[in-house]
Amino acid sequence: VDVILDIVGGSHLEQNVKLLNPDGRLVTIGILGGAKGTLNLGLVLSKRLVITGSTLRARSPAEKQHIAAQLQQHVWPHIANGAIRPVVQAAFPLSEAAAAHTLLENNQASGKLVLIVDEKHASTRA
Image 1 (cartoon, rainbow, N blue to C red):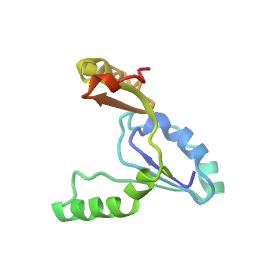
Image 2 (cartoon, rainbow, N blue to C red):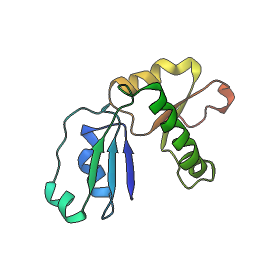
Image 3 (spheres, helix red, strand yellow):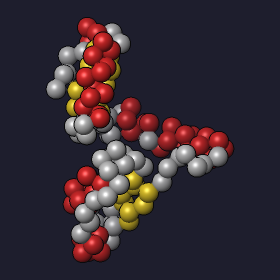
Image 4 (cartoon, rainbow, N blue to C red):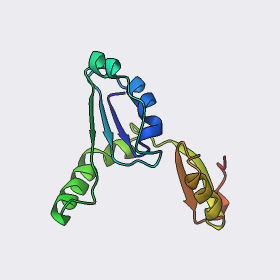
């Protein structure tokens, strides 16, 4: 892959670096899997990777608005046409939100956990 937008952080760092193509970019925006990870600098150098991190918390409302507009223009169309597909681990009926949250608390979510308000569509449980 060319770009990874990572919300997990430390526990996925080594795997993310291995998955990146030469000249790839890893952008860490969250550390749900921890703030520390193992990094093979030889692989980073040989692949000419760029690793960066950011958070929206310290940004001004104007910066956040600009980022949201760029996301809508450059990312959402790829999601809409299927070029980018989120990894969904499981879908839970809203009544089972606590079970989904338990997976998050225990760092057992390797994909998106979806809460379904219309429970007749909640059929992809893990």
